[in-house]
Length: 333
Image (cartoon, rainbow, N blue to C red):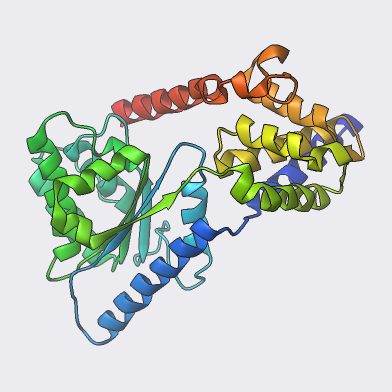
């Protein structure tokens, strides 16, 4: 039996989780969806006719908070017959993993094998490791390999190591027995990968999750606020839909659509905790403060000169902490 306070926290948690599961379709996602569908159905047609032409891929490029990873999860989930890598199931149409940091060719190969359920106990060369990866992808009938945070995979300062990464990706897509399409998602620096090799650039199409702006996205973001508030059983104060507040929201999110959604959900949670019936400016201010740990003078929802604030700098510490956790996890693996 839960106490009233525990029941309230549980109910709010359920609502927030439901909001986090929602997905807002936008032009960048529709472009990604159309390209992936074309690759998927072309690959399935080839398999049906016993043909294994070289595979192609997609690179989803965007800054932190742009919504790349969320979009790809949505992309995979909308295909009910696309078997993801699952314990106890041999077939895995798509395998998705986050590149460990620091990312060497050998370390990423180890992570792929571990994800596929075939960890190796003794030291092998990176060439042998990636041969094993390709063999296991074929055994699992994998059509797509997704590498998130792929810019870390391409962060070597040595050109020879960069070329090894390029050659490995190409060999996976060109495997004569079982070619696998590559899906990369990462920061804008990932584009340097395609400048190094024209063949790779021809096989992997970049799709840019560009920053949002009030001029191009203000109306849709205003609509998103209303939709999410309604889903959270809240009204919306008039000030929230005014131009100034929408501009503040976009700026607080460093012009990144994914962060806009996260801040909206955070504000709704603040309103629910305070037992308010309408979503107000203070809820957005509290959500940003909780996320960034900043004083009122550095809060874009409270400061008069909000454009002078650099929210990306305030939020970057969270990204560094995430990278540190991934690095420690990789060192312990």
